[in-house]
Structure formats: C-alpha cells, structure tokens
Amino acid sequence: MFDIYVYFYTGVLLVILGSIATAIGPGVKDPIVRTLNTEIPSVGVSLILLTYNHTIALLTFIAATVIIMMILLRAIVRMEELGAEL
Amino acid sequence: MTASVLVPTVVSPEVVSLYIPAIFTGLLVGLIGLLAISYQKNDLHALILTDIVSLGMLILVAAVGTDLAEALILPGLVVELAEILAISEILMSREMRKMDKTVELIPLPLSFNMEILDTAPTFLAIILIIYGAFLSGFTGGAIAGGGILFYVLSKMTRGVPSNTWEGVAGASAIAWCLWIVGFLIFFVAPSYWLLALFLAAFGIFIKVAFKVGLIGVIGREEFKKDKE
Image (cartoon, rainbow over all chains, first blue to last red; front, side, top):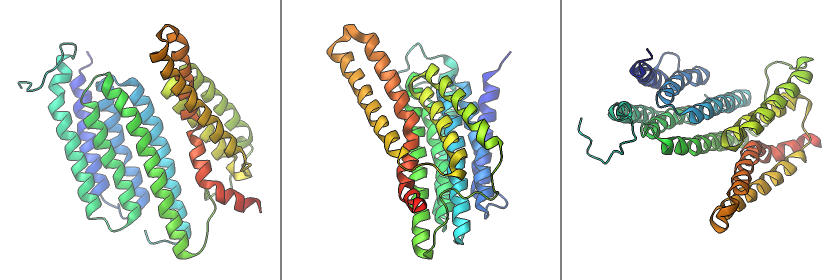
C-alpha cells in the first residue's frame, strides 16, 4: 500500500529542484527569498529520511532546520539594519 | 546491480537498491551548492548556500540506511548548526566594525509587547522540557533546548539577566562530565550498566539542552552593554 519508492523519488526530485532554485532561482538576489528556498530541499531530505526509517534523525533534522532558519533570518535582518550590501 | 562491497544480510533489498540513486543525489546536490558558492560574491549568500551543501552531506550519510547512518546524522546536524551560528556571528561583527555602529542582539521589526508573550512561552517551554526529559538522550536534549531557546527569545524583548548564562554554561559542563563518567562505568564496571546508561542518557540530555548557552556566550558582551 505504501510504496516507499514514491516517497524516495519525490524526495530526490524536491531536493534537486529545490537546490537549483536556491542557487539560480528567480529572485534569489534577495537573501530572504534564498533562505525560504532552502526549505524546499529540506522537505525533500525529510522525505528521504522517512523512507529510510530514520525517525530520530528526522525529528532532530526538523528541529535543526527551524533553528537554522531563525539564525539565518536574524543574520539577514541585522545586516539589513546595519545597511550592509546584500 | 551487483554490489561490489560486502552488504550484510540484515540490510533490506529496498535499501540496497536505493543506495546508488541516493549517493548520486547527494553528490549532485553538493555539487550544485558548491558551484553556486563559487560564483557568489556576497558572504551572506554563500552562508545560506552552505545549507544546501550540508543537505547533500545528509543524503550521502542517510544512504547507508542503518543505525550507523542515524548515529552519524545527529552530530552532523549539530555541527552544521554551530557552524552556521558561528559564521553568521563573525559576518555580523565584521560588518559592525566596518560600519562602526551597532544594532540590538535580536532585531524585531514589530514591537512585540503583547500579553501572550508573557503567558504562552512559559507554558510551551514547560511542555517541551517535560517531553524532552521523558525522551532523554540526544533527541530529548534537542527538544528541551528548543523549549529553552523559545522561552529566552520570547522574553528577550524585556531583557534577560546576563549572569544567567554563566550558570547555564556551568551546568552544561557538569552534565558533560556525567556523560563521560557514564561511558567510563560501561568499561570499568559493566555490571552497573543501568546506572551508566542513565548517566549517559541524562548527561547528554542536559548537555544538548543547554547548548543554548552558546548563544548566551556569544551575546555576553552585548548583554553587558545593555546593562550599563
């Protein structure tokens, strides 16, 4: 009923497309857009970890992604307030 | 596909058949990230792109598909987190020195002076910490640490006493010692394995939970500046 290959290859597709989108996607000159784009490959990685049954790794990965997001957004906002060139 | 390496029989054929595609995905993603970094002139953009490279690394490790992979992903994630935190701090302090002005530690675009920030963080942090203590070990530490971080960041708008961080860092170091003692007991006195197991589990729980102290140590100077 649950075909693991569907999850795996959806994850692979999301990771590859998402990383291309982060690298050269539209509007990535804006660092906030680039940071939001990194969420797409991380959903893909979550699906891949789910295929392999890496439950603890998946939970930690989700928590780490959220914290990394917070750190990056804080860095971007602080740099913008400084008036640095982005 | 004929496996050219020794594959134990306990590994399921699905995992073996997914190994080659997963390895190539990881390599491709890492390559995309590294190429994008090499064309990037801005340091902040390069920092965001290192996130992509680390995702490629995670897929490569996960492709092994056993408990070993799971055990290797967890430190990989923590190292990535610490690395991004440290490099973003370096970038910001360099920029501040260049521009010769400072901004507050956590810039918030809105004035978050809402009633819910007084009540909700305590409740959510307590639930996260209790759940983390119940899980124990590395994951529990991460969850409880998330709870503490959430609490501190929510209260940040009203100011956090700077000397709290010293205590948090000290407790973290003592928990680290507990973890090492737990491992020693495993080898020196294997008959006390249960004690060793609990020392190790709760040592690493407290240690990982208090990783939030890292942020405090980095921000210590700015907290002192606030107090004056």
